[in-house]
Length: 475
Image (cartoon, rainbow, N blue to C red; front, side):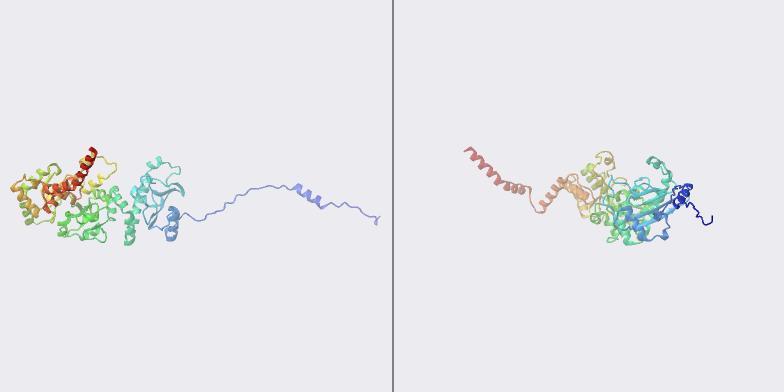
């Protein structure tokens, strides 16, 4: 029947979805995506031409915790048999503990392929460059480094050689600006002198950075190169004098003749100068000569030499008598033409310590009182100035009576005075002061009896008081 109703089953939508979901399967997948957080390259790996000075300054401050900007920087890379990159900085001022023994030896941080290894590698840079700060990044060193491996590593020796070379280049660039070099030398002059003493390979280059005051350059310091350009044609040597202070060397009797002849003398007043100059034998073919040591020859003409020889022969008896009076205090007594205004001076042996070096060694806290100091101590030679009135008069007195007590007193006084003027210290100051007091008494025309009487008068009241107190005790 067409009109009969049809009954159909209608499926629920939820049932359909359930059927579909039963056919499909969910699978979880983990995907790792690398996101580069720091996109900046290390500054030492970049091209120096693309780096601003502000970036170097900021890197220096973060590296060293210094609040000041560096005086100079050197950014370089070495390629060839070995490869490494480096940035070196020279600070503006020296730290207060620059030469502290227990201090960390250097400030160069060692990286291997951008991985930090250590910051106290002693083999990386010599001690005299311990003020230089920076980093070294090597491509050739192994990552698993130990100190034993580092000590034997040849790559490290090549890196060290290159670092020293680049440091010297950096100092040369600083020297082009006079004001900057003055700051640098005030802060690190001792390090340069220590380098002259220790580094034989770079000694000639380092000697160009040395600066000293001199007889012709009192206000500003002068370099050895400038000294050589001012030398006269006759002058064969670079003359220098060592001493405790500039004031003491400026008034030294050793400068009298050299000043009069127009020769320039360098003032070496820093204790480390004594050590440096022992190693620095010459500069640009000119030998360095100390004016306080015997064997110093000046360019005299034949007439002057003949005249001096005659004076030496004339004063031979006086020299023998003075040597006899002084005994072991001096090795010998000679006639010298190295002084013009002083009557006498103490010269030291050519190969021993100078007076200043002897003073430095005596002040060492842990010095050996015997040993080296006993045989390195200078052999003292008393030099007499032949034309001085005191020497001429002394010659007459010795000729009259060489056993005269006044002669002995005068000779001892002259010797002790010349010791002080030549930079030595007196072994018995009380004996020297007694001789000076005797001279004062002579100047005031006082007899010994008058002095004794005056002393007795000053003591008299004290004696009376003692007597009265004694009498009271008896009562």
